[in-house]
Length: 398
Image 1 (spheres, rainbow, N blue to C red):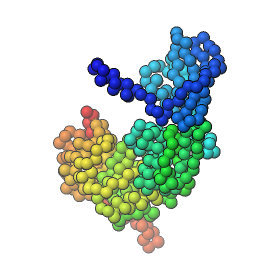
Image 2 (image 1 turned 120 degrees about the vertical axis):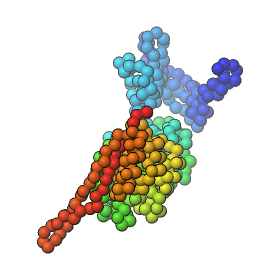
Image 3 (image 1 turned 90 degrees about the vertical axis):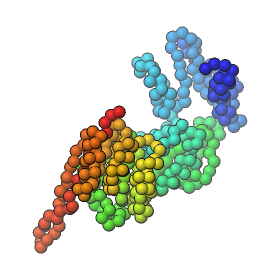
Image 4 (image 1 turned 180 degrees about the horizontal axis):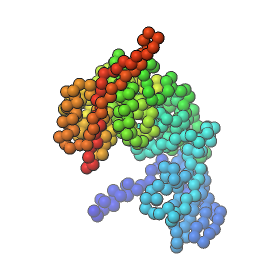
């Protein structure tokens, strides 16, 4: 593609954003080398104040220098360079990162902080996974994903027990710091660039753990997957960090909650068609702080037809396995992904078996015959639960 219109388009794309333009007003050399020199620039900032910038000047010949803010290996240009050049050919000289500087400003130890970048990204899953598993989150922001947007995302998910620290124009004369609630942050306008720290102020009322027996979690009578079934299903799913799990026909959301305990990153969607059960899931998310679980009120059929985001690599089908639902699950599951379904009725087991045999998937059938002890006349007797079938299957690679 050539011609004046192409040149104009490229020029428009490369035109500097006036909000971030810094004009050089003075230069002072601080070190002179054979290949590189170091200068300190006095720059005029967009807000009318002045700042200082240290730059490296390459004199040509062997080597090249890339100048970056902060630590180039923390959500910076370093990862991009490593995709094109061997590490042995690169030397990194990190500065203080925005996360370090922000934590220092607010007096927050950052050895357990999890950093996430929302700059240029539409998927908030890394943010919610971090809110689920750590007590301090550093969020690198960008246009459309600033403090206000982050606060509104968290509030829409129902997040409680957290406060926000915001550092605006960090390191410049106009730097401004604020500590406030999510509600307050959601209603303010923020100056760019900025850095967000989210600090946990209150622990969830229930621990996020494995092995729930029913006490503590909201659920309708008999609509919580039994503990042995959950344990087996989660094992068969072989959950991995960074994956996407769809829990279809979620009931109380117990499988989703325990999956959140096992997955340090990724996304979990818990789909339930009954409003009262859906509210149970939302309440259980709040009680356990499993913010990476997204509760969806919908039928399984509608969800499978309408979900437009990335396909899952894990599906748990906890009930309602019809031929139609199974076919749609097969279509939506990513190649190499795993499906685990439960069945109490032989007719459901037959649907699962034939629905997986026909396309030639590898699958296996497990039967659980679980018994639990109850007191009887000063002794114990074993009472059996209803037998349950679990079917595990793996979708062939494309």
